[in-house]
Amino acid sequence: MQPTKFIWFDGKLVPWNEAQVHVLTHSLHYGSAVFEGIRAYQCSDGSSAVFRLEDHAKRLINSGKILRMQIPYTADEIAKGVLDLLKANGMRDAYIRPLSFVGYGEMGVYPGNNPVQTIIAAWSWGAYLGAEALEKGIRVCTSSFARSHVNTSMSKAKAAGNYINSILAKIEAKENGFDEAVMLDTNGFVSEATGENIFIVRDGKIKTTPWTSILGGITRDSVMQLARDLGYTVEEQQFTRDEFYIADEAFFSGTAAELTPIRQLDNRTIGEGHAGPVTKHLQQEFFKIVKGENKKYASWLAPYSL
Ligand code: PPE
Image 1 (spheres, rainbow, N blue to C red):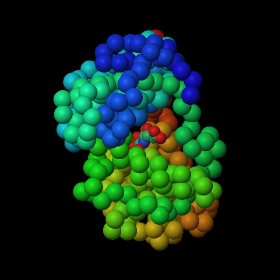
Image 2: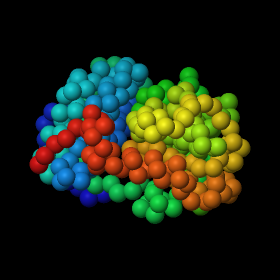
Image 3: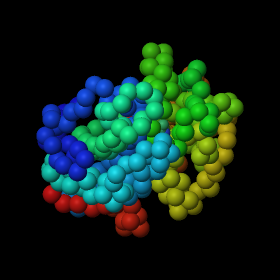
Image 4: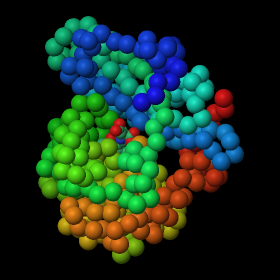
């Protein structure tokens, strides 16, 4: 990762190398942090815009609420912090990472009165699963690790601690030669990937897993709205890994992963083994929206100029 100039740290822009915390920071020991992943894109007309900034900022606050963390900022203040940072860093496009964490104070699981601190960092992050992946699709496997039960770790919070589950699944998948892992929920239905939501297409219908054991992806929501606007039928419905095997098309959605086609699951080729027509259509339209080329979705963009 290439450092950028500043990191927003509790309302102040501090030089990248000076944004530091103590090693006894609570969240470093217990995973008590919540975060966001947001992208800013350079638009076709030369301006720039952050994609669904307000929704990401709100989700950060809601993640804090689920974890009983009092983040001392409003969603609007977080959103303003993101824009201030991008301008100060002179970034026309970026991956943006707000993080609120329980800081230094008492040790022990109970977070007590330790301060809740917030940072926003931004750096350049290309295609998450590789540039080729966006076009050709990736090979994925079903993980031996189940996604947490809905009453285990609160998947609707984008909480740092939840990512232990993702890290275990990701390492296993990579070590077995796959690009990414698909996790099943504790009832055996398809849940989500380590950092992406899942869509399949069968007989012209689009299906995605319901908002139960998954993070409510903002890209997932955008894809559902976009697909319906384009006339596709979209269902939020449980499905099994064998239904996934016989899908005509499948893809992941996520801020980092954008829309990444899946060409194989557990060595079964999905459809024709490359990005299918529905996936390509949605991918194309999605990239038009983030680049400001579709005015219908202008409300999803927070424009800024340097
Ligand atoms: N599920 C999980 C578990 C997840 O981490 C993400 C985002 C999503 C679904 C998709 O959510 P959304 O980005 O709102 O569409 N994962 C972030 C972190 C990836 C990372 O490696 O770090 C991301 O895409 O920014």
